[in-house]
Length: 630
Image (cartoon, rainbow, N blue to C red; front, side):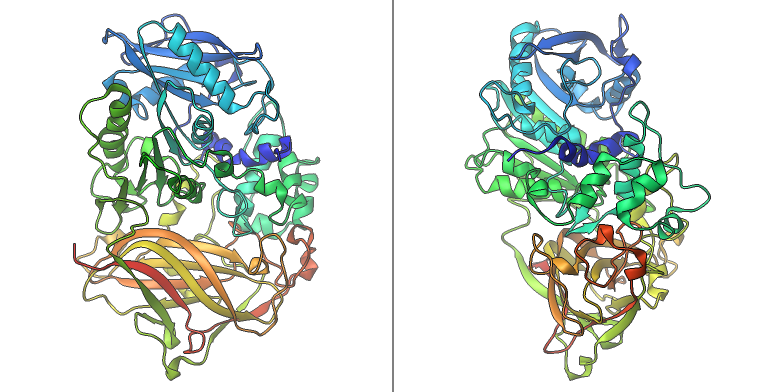
């Protein structure tokens, strides 16, 4: 099954936000910046324009950048983008994202994909696989591009690498479907995988409202400009509360239907529409090109994507050429200027420069230039808390860890001890859709706006939410020794509701000491280590939602994905549980309806939720911890 054009547009939002203001350097251009000026220069590199013929006669525009000071044949590094490559943006990239690679010496080729900027043909967002022998897709266009480059560019070695972030990560993944023999290495970075289960627009079926609306309104209101949506005098929290049914947002606020918004409201469940866009389903089961996957622990857009693609590709990786790096970054943060801090949290050094100089540059050097064997492990993972890079043979680790349960207890306690008879009574709270829990302290800034703090909201202090009656908090005592999580983290939750639907949000948190030994900005501060939302109606099936049975304790397994964190001595471990996260996640009516997108606000009802922690219903966070000291 192929994806409809509207689905491709929907799935491309991650990349659009990357270019529009999510805080990641983007090689974006305006239509009048298609051609490079004569003598274009970026550092030591000089650029020129070329037109590259495809098998169907269409020609794609690309910039070719070659170092002035390096003679002799050089390998080629390719990026393929829908955003264009303006001179100023290219110069910025050579100063940051490309800096370490450029110093090693490559021919950089920056290509506009079909139908964008200087390239001919029709643009199709996340173009699907070709369905006929004479058809074209991103895989064939990459193949034809590489074939022309190695045959036409003077002084090249015949070896090519490709890399990129978000949409550019996705085009890199597509290059591996039927790879050209000259493609010797790729790096798929922050690529989306599944837009209903874990990436930009839904998590476990729960709709990521603010992100999705700002994307659709910004990109589709006027095809000629990219103008962020104006919320007026309200912050987004208040603005969304005043809106009616989700189905009518576009007509009410921009006066016309928006294609992507129509896709959202038209496909409330995990149907063929969503399944057709799963990235790993298009890739070969047995990968043949070495791949360096890259992800960031605090990636707001696509953390699920690179880890899931890596995991699924690893199953057929017979030659052990799949590697992964997970660092302390937001979406694409490894390409930015400095990775020394995330929000107010010191990371012990410039983690972005470390990745680019000690991992990415040696990776491409080895596969494209040869030399000594790679020194990096198959999985290089940054352990937050201790601020250490650690190497493993795979991620999550298969050896050296054991599963342990952090149990919830009465009185807001959390421990590795199982519950007793004293924990029998559940904790209850009222979840009111008219007063949802904000996802960050207010006022909330828009996702796409000048000065937006969206890329770093996961560094927000969570202590404010402990005070709310609709947030349950469970804490350990002060740790007398460090506790390390290394691998899987899953919330095993037993909960009930007086309604017939509910959302469950679980946050695993590091609570910093409130003492003179702690930096003033961090005293008593609470940092999210791992989190996730689950929409109750999908408890049994994402394809076929069902109402919940009122007042019945039901079990939920909520994947918090993986974590690598050390809770230091003197800190506490906390778990927060709530039922709204607004407007990051849309409000659940808490009364089952076939489509929440069409639900009228009058159907939204306050309900009483209960979280159990008894011997019969032992709610816990199940985590992997190391078996030895290190």
